[in-house]
Length: 259
Image (tube, rainbow, N blue to C red; front, top):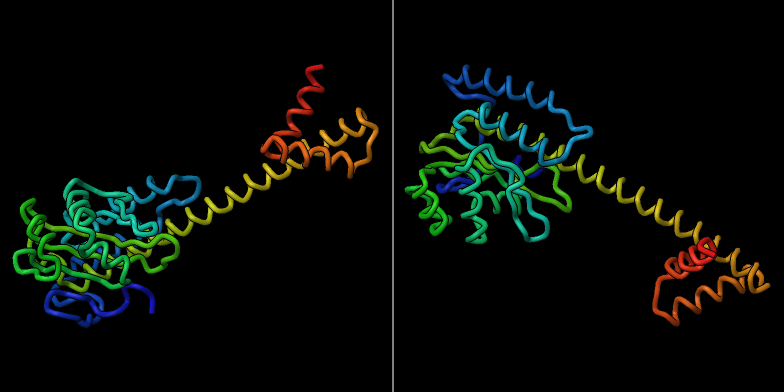
């Protein structure tokens, strides 16, 4: 089962979801459908991850039923940070959790479960955090884990100044749609970064090999040695001076060019 597809965890315990939508939620369904269309139009190519996530959280703030402020928490190792936020309410609520070392957004990301807080006045699971966050006007929240999690895990966080803002199934459906869009953006950015690093490393390796070959040619001409002996001279110099083989080779080539 993908993260976020099990029961919704509330202060009262696990809550099984019903079908998509709830009674009297036709307006919400239309809003969620519009959000889904907007998310499908988000461009990922040739854009920085923070730019993409900022656009997605902005769409979520307008499209998730009950939402007033939205953020994305990512965790690399054990270090959490807010990668994007639609307003200061979400950023503040996130940072209070980071200060405590726990809270719904962090626990949702780590545990792969949906965590809903219906009322900060009665919530019992994170007593220190809820006492602090309700002083800043936050009364309810919904945290949905990213469904695809690898080296980077995280969660979508949705906040409201009203209690029970996210009890409708529409809010959960919308939250899951947004969490999936965020996860796709993160996976895409991670893959792009990996490919960029591989290309850069390959370029460095090719340049290193080229300059070493040049240096070997210089030594073969100057010292009347063969290719293997020239390489041994380079390696001995690298060990003697505790410098990289490439740096020794660059020095030899540059000294020849200067002469």
